[in-house]
Every structure is written in structure tokens, then in C-alpha cells.
Image (cartoon, rainbow, N blue to C red; front, side, top):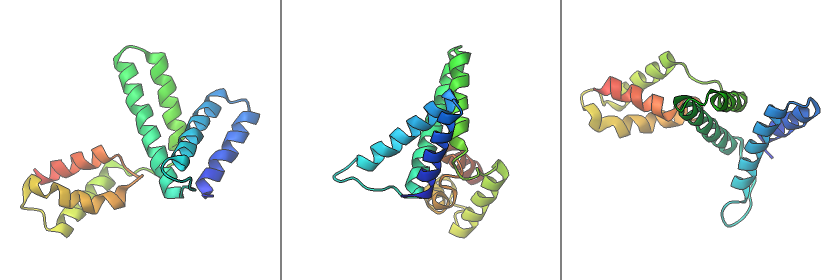
Length: 152
């Protein structure tokens, strides 16, 4: 069993004891997503920390998108709830890269791939280098936007 899953389970138990209703709900949803992924496919399997991180990243992104949609729809209370859930999930993710760090990685990847003069045609080549470096540490959309900006 992955250490991240153990930490999630321990924190869920602690939140239950502390009667932190919001945190319990969020952690239960995350644990349900992890359990669902473990039994998906032909046979059940234990997920690695990397696979669990991918699930956490996906769940946090869902919450951020939902919060934006609720805020745009004028439902601030629901948007705040989604934002709070995203904050809880983010605690279990690796430290996120800043915009400056993403920019530096993109510049380095463009130099490394020799894509400087190719323009947007080199986007796939550059993203292929960046994706493993930023996985779980930066939103793919933000990385792609920076690549587009620097290649243009």
C-alpha cells in the first residue's frame, strides 16, 4: 500500500475524531475515487503513490473548475465550498511550480529540443519534454499556455 494512501486514511480518521465535517467529506470522496481506480479494469490492484497523485490532481482540478462555474453563476456559497475542497486536496499534492519556474522549464525545454525557430509546430516536442518534469506539480494548461507564448 502506498504511503500517500496511508496518510489519507490516517488524516480521514483524525478528521472524523475532530468532527471536521467538511474535511471528512472531501477525504471520503478522494478515498472513493482511489478505491474506484483500484478496482477498475480486469483485476483489482494497489495504486502507487504516483497514480494516487494523478487522481488527486484530477480531483483538485474538478473542484477548481466547479468553483469557477459556481462563481460565474452567482452561487458564491457553493463556489466557496468547492474552493475549500480543492484546498484540502492540494495539501496532499507535491508543491506546485510557480509561474517563473514554469517559464524557466519551458525555456530550457525549448533550448534542449532545438525548437526555437520552428514555431507552434514544435509544441508537441516541447510538451513531450516538459510533461514528465511538471506532472502533478503544475497544471497542464498553464504549461501549454507558457509553451505557446514562448514559441510564438
